[in-house]
Length: 67
Image (cartoon, rainbow, N blue to C red; front, side):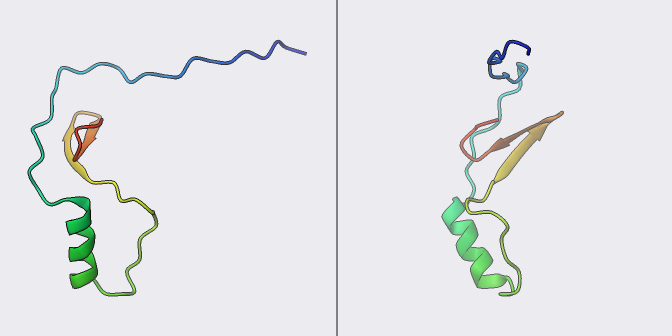
């Protein structure tokens, strides 16, 4: 039986691009707007929404600057 080893976690390749600071609405504001303007039959498939605010090549960033 092969020896079981634990692999090191993968890291994302580096990029020189730095996203601009996000100045748009917060997640809470976006969810409130969705609730106000979208039809109730439209439902979310996630508990915590992902707000993609910038993209560069194959990378995307959220509102906190996390890639």
